[in-house]
Length: 308
Length: 308
Image (cartoon, rainbow over all chains, first blue to last red; front, side):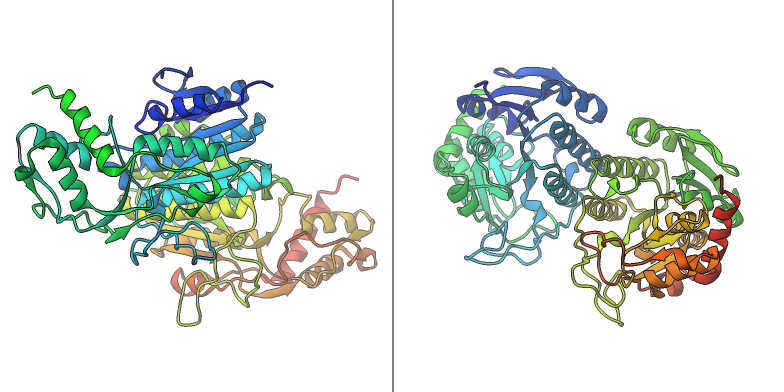
């Protein structure tokens, strides 16, 4: 039997660039759609926002599987940018073209920003279950709303078109190659450069997963038959301050850390931690990288890239 | 001051073709985007599914207003067709291009199929109010879900982009020029041809509005400052059987009517009637065509077009 063939989007992005290896490891022939080639995958050069061109590639590849990670992610801007609207359209067009070309299993990337953040819960639960009710989906941003709306349409369409669809919700993540303006790299790089690193008070509780585990989690989810929303996250609560202190220790300059110097981002929840019964129990995935090890390796990765 | 300029989509469609006159009557310069020209409007030939081409037209026209009625409407097929996904993308792309070109007021067409039909309510209410809670939105079709999802994203984006947006939900409508496969024309044409007209039992309760009133209602809504979802409907309950009997009487062949001969469409609600406090009270619109008069005139319109 021929290898299953997966269309992968976002393959040159933060998660996607770590996804090729686990997909290949699971026996997939990986076809990357995007503007940049990636090692280990057949590259189809296409702008996914050119929905007709992307659909033509999907029709040509006739993949059995789709792993769609691409979305607009410009740091800071993405929360309320109009680009989110384009990605709703691009995502749905790609899903349709994939299904019409005979595809049978799709996994699309969602976000913790789909949940209602106004009333924090201990663990954000995807569905009603024996351990409690589903966490309401009431996004407060254009980004969260666009993802939420895409999921609703994708699920209804998958049902009508007879394809099998899961929706992997990403929480916080970190690791080599992250946008340097984001929390972990910006603090690590400041400390490595011998500069003060300002941060918020850090008492927010979060769910942080190493990008390798996120990518492997998506590959495991794709390889399963689990349908519907699935948090792709660690399920382990950690305060931002603990994360900052791990970075500070790994950088060797803990005295330069300045928690409390910056305000929190408006609308941030106190606590945002995933329920992971679906990912662990149903998709059978276990993360491999303990937070302390992952942060230490990430700080080392940035140390190796210091140019100043 | 220059006339306000409105981008109109779906202008060659059932509602849209009746919308040009009331818009012109209210002082708008009407710019129709689509594949066919319409009288009374400046025509911009464009396929709205070619989102970049449509965005380029919106950028060029720099309209102050947008009335977006276009959507996939192939009789029977539209409930679960993949084309609904394309129209989510086309709608959001157009809205974004309109806003970025300086637009300030948009009205988009929604549907009664956004509401939860499983537990019929006396009147489908758009928002929580003194007269009762909002009717839940839980569409059971790809079409209803696509419209619902589009509204969520459009509303979040409008809020972030600082434009004023209303969402006009259409219920049942009828009038000259309707797709001949739909209920009123198909029964009218059969009876006028001296053939039996089979129908369902007809005890379903519906909200039926003449297409002229629907189009005038959209023009009134556009001209108002009402935001959010607004039912564009009569608010007057009528059974399908009463409608059939009006058609039969107007055609002069009541003895050929065969109610109960056909099954109902799967998933149809018993009752589907709009609350109209927002349309009447807030947008200040009153429909002009009583049902009996409208049905009689519509049957006459079909009589004049008999070719057999």
